[in-house]
Image (tube, rainbow, N blue to C red):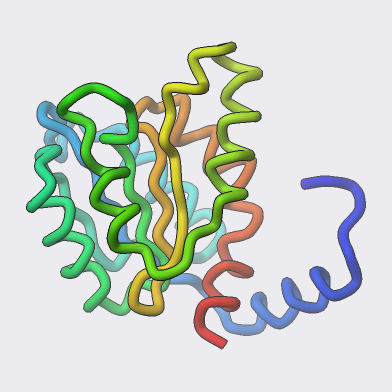
Length: 174
């Protein structure tokens, strides 16, 4: 987290902390992962639990537009306040997560993708331009979508999602 933050940001974070634990949903978009091989879900569960938050829904789906759309609608009906997608954000023909989410998001958070690619550049160099990481709001839920690599999920969590999880959940619900 940066050394400086505004007084209003700090007040918002304090108010968010008073709301208690955040309920989250995890969606892994992959043609090959199974619950036994989904390292990203294990990592995200551990990170959420370490801060007292919880996972209230979890799915692995194929990278098919109809499945991405259906699971987004399904997760929007749960009690999760944040939906964490991983996978399907590249430019290969099978990568459709971004395409579906970009059509469905009611509000976007362009800064998420911008900052993710800056941080990613420090890890993978110019290949960061291949990422279509995105975030926004859909039906009162924060939706965050990252690449499916374990390094990308960890980077997004440590630099962006983890530090602002409560704040994000609070903002969308106030």
